[in-house]
Amino acid sequence: MQLSSFLQRFNEPETLKMAKLGRELRARGIDIIDLSLGEPDFDTPQHIKEAAVKAIHDNWSHYTPVPGFPDLREAVCAKFKRDNNLDYKPENIVVSTGAKQSLANAVLALVDEGDEVIIPTPYWVTYSELVKIARGKVKEIHTTTENGFKISPSQLETAITDKTKVFLFSSPCNPSGAVYSRDELEALVKVFRKHPGIYIISDEIYEYINFTGKLAGQAGGHESIAQFNDIKERVIIVNGLSKGFAMTGWRLGYIAASAEIAKACEKIQGQFTSGANSITQKAAVVALTADLRPSMEMVKEFTRRRKKVMELVKEIPGMECSEPDGAFYIFPDVSSYFGKSNGQTTINNAGDFCMYLLNTAHVSSVMGDAFGEPKCVRFSFANSMEKIEEGFRRIKEALAKLK
Image (tube, rainbow, N blue to C red; front, side, top):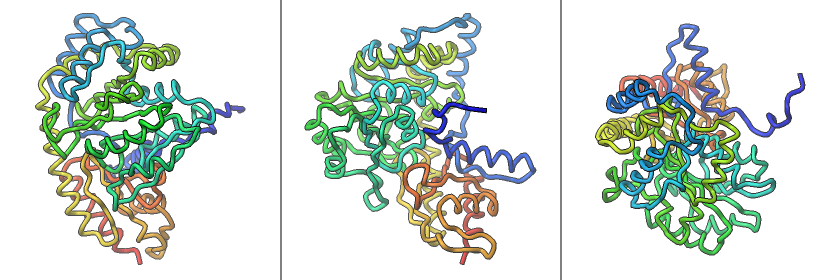
């Protein structure tokens, strides 16, 4: 069979690959503890589910406008004003089938063949692959645990060339949990001011999973790079409902951007999927405008788990790990285990490390190569405290066998 060469441009997401391997082992009766997937282990809040049921009974079952229902786009604008003090109009908003589609729309709307896209490491696995799909060139800026997995203005300046078209990053970051402060963002903005041809795609899907402050725009909360008015027209914010509202399966993401970029994303989406699911959109209006207490309660539980995970990791020799300020992952450097063996299996890299844990400890994780940092491994704490404690007990026991 002669398939398209397009398929050779990009790779399957390692996060999904590890989840698939875990399911296969589980189907064979093996008790696998999943610390790989980035999915809240909470159910969607009741008031959002009730809104969806009402939408079904009210017969919201027809095709939707490509950029989203008007009331949802208004609700997104209201959310930006409430939480981020950002002013947008419905013409700036495009609703998509998940934030992944929002990202794809933005990259395809901006990147031409040969354009450079600067991405700080570690980054979410799909960023680099979307750039490859658009025939752009990924330019990585490497970070370390010592600098909190955040880039400096000088690193950014050094990476920029006359071919740079886009800077793509997330805060809070998947997989490192790094969160940029207002001062850190402003320092980067000073560099962008000198390069007016560069666009910034800011992935803020983990906005509410933030351990540095409070929700809903209160002091110490999430900081968006779009708050700097002189570059706002060059910023494309990507957000959605999956993480902050435990709505991964509902598939609802959105962007806020200049009207010109929003229109371009609408054009692309019109040929790929058209409008997002009608029932999800009606539920999303309620999610974005109603009480955020369920989200806050979820973050409280993630805060408890983060504390426990950091305690457990410190008990494992050779794992260098910084405490995440957001999201629900840790991203330790495990390179001290490279070259070690239990007599049957030798750990040569992060991929071997993950497979060793999967086959020996029956715990799934994701290798750091997929995120641009081959010395690291991502563990998710979006699982019950009981599973987390048992998972890291198994990990500690399995790693103790390596010499």
